[in-house]
Amino acid sequence: MEKLITFAVPCYNSAAYMDHCVETLLTGGKDIEIILVDDGSTKDDTPAICDRYAEQYPGIVRAIHQPNGGHGEGVNQGIRNASGLYYKVVDSDDWLDADALKKVLDKLRQFAKMKRPVDMMIANYVYEHVEDQTQKVMRYTNVFPQDRIFNWSQIGRFRPSQYLLMHSVIYRTELLRKCNLELPKHTFYVDNIFVYQPLPYVKTMYYMDVDLYRYFIGRADQSVNEKVMVTRVDQQLRVTRLMIDAHDLNRVHAAMPKLSRYMFNYLAMMMTISSIFLIIDGSPEALGKRTQLWEYLRTVDRHIYHKMKYRAVSAVSNIPGYQGRKLSVGLYRLARKIYKFN
Image (cartoon, rainbow, N blue to C red):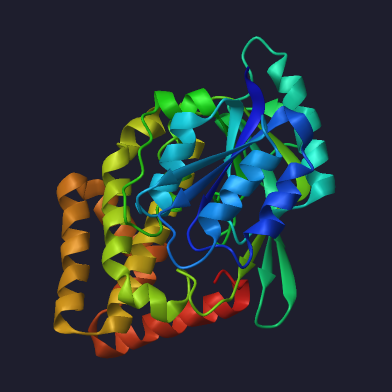
């Protein structure tokens, strides 16, 4: 029996906080499926907690235990096993707002009755900052029409700090399978691929101005912590290269110019972040990797390379010389402080 939506929850040593996540999802009722993917947890009771929920909520919760493959393989496992018409990833330390979830599910039920259900639904997400107990709502009222189905030709402009993240999207499950989405194993930051590669396959969308996803941010061990990102920069590079290879942006532009502009800016942001953290590392090897990344882009598409390196936001990370690199890092940290994106 097909469910309305599958929520995939990758879990790795998540016992301290996953209950809160799962309990918020369960408010969705019998129309939903929750797949708890235990990613080889060994340090706590995560496997037992997954099994307990599956036993307590048969027909709603499923537990899958896999050898450790990283967050991306948890997402992949969810896609392979999902029975829902729609698919959403919820990290085990995050949660969904119950009232917003009810509104979203009511709308998805309407889509389910259509001959061709909407490909992607977008809702707001909220940064829940640990360090100062503040919230920041990320909404898209300036970009997307509200309360109607639309396509890429009908969108507005994204602000420089505004992107579609895994937190904000709900895909039609079959679309993810048809675009052959397969995230790499043992790699952080693969959520960027998740919200980039499928986009040209998306033909219809719907935006709801509700604060659905609550993104818990600010723990010292999180993958978006600056010190952690420096140590994992090779994984950031791997993801960025996969995104470079994912699509010919010139071809996307010919069919959907507004989408190609957004994808160009997203890729430029990824190039910037990769470059900045290699600069923060500062070693000759790291600076060499920065040069290699830009050279790789140039070999793939010379036109995109020149436009991105000298005219896009990524130009900030290409200021020449030692002082230029120092300025690049300073500007990045200022932007992070203003926009509070990690």
